[in-house]
Length: 628
Image (cartoon, rainbow, N blue to C red; front, side, top):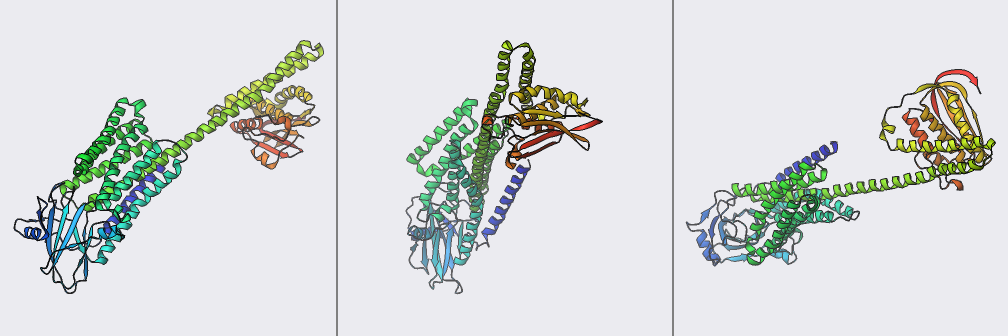
């Protein structure tokens, strides 16, 4: 939960910074150019500049009531705007006229100096297509050249609604604003680009269709945002505004289509929600066919189709995402819902802009930020899914290894006592009477080893054994606990030609008898396993304060310092001895686990090639000062 709050806090800080830099990027307001504008529609698209000027100066021409007034719906006939600029002698040689509508397809400017002839002005977009620098907006240079009066005509045409967000600035003022806008765009794109590129670096680790689909959606969203902001023309100067519009429209179309297929894959609708799957499939086919049909039959209405269809699409996807998030509240579902809520909010801002006739820069800026947010969320979704899949893969691999080790342990550690039982049973059939007692003792030892191993498996598979409270203890005379165990293992020691001795103080201790017996069995079994023939093993005790240490000494193969550091871990062994190479005993791991469960200290010292001493401490109840 803390990580979620931290992520949300950083998102809020990022958005607040974007808003503040966006306000700063607007810079100082330019002169109110909208006030002198006179606008007329050209129904037949036949006017020449002289006729258009006469019409814009007639009483029937429209005057703007505010800078963002909409003068015609989408796909209106061409509109002309005319106005006069009086040149002051202190003015600079040049002004830069910008139409701050990056998605405006056709716009042309004519200038007349001091009542002379009308001259068409080549825009900087045209120069950019010839190898110059690109710009966010359509831009023209107005040369003064000693004139005292400039008459200006601007003609717009295209599928956009008719507006004239014009600015007339000095080159220095315009470039300052341009640089601030580019800085803001870089700030907006920094996070989504970083997340998307990080997601791209992770895709190689997993081969799932939904991951490249996620990144494809993010790429389409960034491409569409670059179109509506003018960034596409800035970065690719050779593109015309019409070409950029086709690229941006194609990106929106692909985004809608891919998002439906992604929803089917992400929500697994084919398996769990057949009706929803059918609806999404139908919507995908509708997008696949309707948009190409519109391009062929009536391309001028493509943007309107994407606008209205995209609004319905975003609303439907937001509802679908919210429904599934309520049913399954995971981080991936939250991100999926967040994508469409951001999209739906930007659609709401766009419709509010159309209704209230807000400044065009508001809706374009919101759509650009929305594109960045959606791309960031999509890229983050990729990262979350890759990390989740990696975690699941790691857990599956660990589980597979654990199973392999459990099977290996059961095979090697359980097979040996079972084989011993078989050998003892076969020998008992033909053994003389004086040897039968020893063979029965050996069988008891083997069956006790089987029982001990099964108890270990039961405890290792139980979290209670590791995390639960310590079992109750009883007061017991230590020799009564240890002596029978030593007698059991003497038969095995003779079979291995190892001398087994023990020295036990007559001390009363607090113990849990089954646990202590298992610990001692593991110590003796481990010592006999790694002590070669002719060696010695000693089980003894040593008093140290309130503890009585039960220690097992041997002069076996010993361990290196590296092996001693990990010998209490599961499935570790000393492999130097050939006959132990196939042994996966868990003796010392069991000793440490039982000691931890009963809150007992452990001790180990080992010298490679010389032997090992290992044991555990028991709390003393009473010392009787009688040694054996």
